[in-house]
Length: 364
Image (cartoon, rainbow, N blue to C red):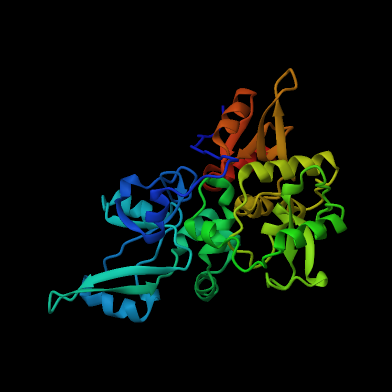
């Protein structure tokens, strides 16, 4: 009954680091056909990845790339116009897939004069077509040329991976290894005391988490984890915390964002009077869709809409929904299928972005 649905898998369990995760941290070559784009984002064996072509042999390009990575092959984070062109041309180059977060890539190239293999590392730029395809941080609204080049120069992979962490059950090894770095040895005690002082209430959205304490974090206002002065600490729910500026390495699972959404509804905090309210309440992975929908002047969606059977059994939760039209957008495939069985038309993020005209016309 709905748009084509795509494969999703989200878990609320802690997933141990497997050999494939370590390999992705280093990067390795795969065939293009093995890379999946079912969510619109690049993935490999259920992990969010980026991909790029390591070889820069053409016209001794390798030397210039090692000096200035912006001259090299762009790395891809999503299915985009450029990759589609390559498909149509039958160009299935071997790509390197990785989930490194530092933006430094191993590159190589053959010296055409000496036949010597030149290798090194450099910072490559992200593909602008990818950013436009998913409207990352409203990229599609930027004028072409200098504004987009400036955005690319400031692009941070850690921020990008954090934005879409709800879409994947495996976190990059860079997140797993660094998430606790910088905290003082007595942080657990300090954190508990701060949360107790504020009665386990999020100081941004007002959510009471006294019965769900694991969902309440303590935020360092100035960003310095070692500064535990009382004026620098404030409790925030995990959703508000992840949306603070410069909060890399904050991987929030889909089950946690769903729980926050339902608790806000229960406590009457899911108030939507403007698109900014929707933007603030929704999963960050939905922000690109929300930005485009606002331009179509459609009605405000519900955030975290529960779908029930005739027996009032909750079978699904949609990230964005228009109940009167029975149209919604989902992150999780099983929930999308369950909602479809209840008569809903359900879009994935990928299809919502690529079929934005159709989506907008169906909810006006």
